[in-house]
Length: 213
Ligand SMILES: Nc1ncnc2c1ncn2[C@@H]1O[C@H](COP(=O)(O)OP(=O)(O)OP(=O)(O)O)[C@@H](O)[C@H]1O
Ligand SMILES: [Mg+2]
Image 1 (cartoon, helix red, strand yellow):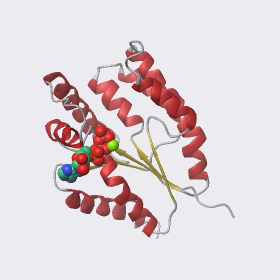
Image 2 (cartoon, protein in one colour):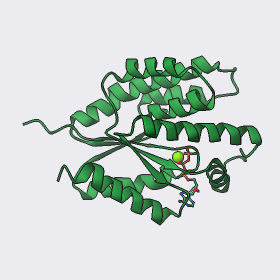
Image 3 (spheres, helix red, strand yellow):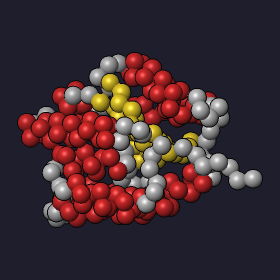
């Protein structure tokens, strides 16, 4: 007998909304239900995809045109999906992924203003019929996210241009939550860590655990 396909869960949200912070909690919750969790993140997630990630972060070498950046993200995503995520789901594992295609939609599309139709073409091309079963959107105002990222020790990105960019990305995410309302769940991430966990627990219970156990 083959094991049933695992669930594919993505965590999204602008910088500092708590994606990494909530990752262990999400893992624990799913493991407590007896599932094996495959934890991964974008960009990266396989050796080759990690090499692409390093290119994307290496901003001092030469300027990366926006379209090249977008294509590199999707190239990395294709490697990640085919060589890590799909095999893990096929083994029956639950895949927990920190950022996925919605990041491209929110950041490159809504944030930078790249053509959303082109992003969708790339998404269709790279993903085929693979979609997350659940996308948890950690939502908070850009000011809060950037302030937290600053507290974490990141360079201060609170200049007005950055703030405007993250505001657009946040609105982009909220629009995605409306458009893909079947798979999206929006969590108020402006509250304390424990309160965010309560929301996450409720979502897992309602969306994934109740109809499986
Ligand atoms: N609900 C919360 N209330 C207060 N502080 C928080 C909360 N969630 C996370 N933090 C803190 O905010 C900082 C940023 O959180 P975290 O690194 O989890 O964000 P992230 O969404 O993973 O950001 P990035 O997109 O940059 O990876 C951390 O120092 C974390 O401890
Ligand atoms: Mg993070």
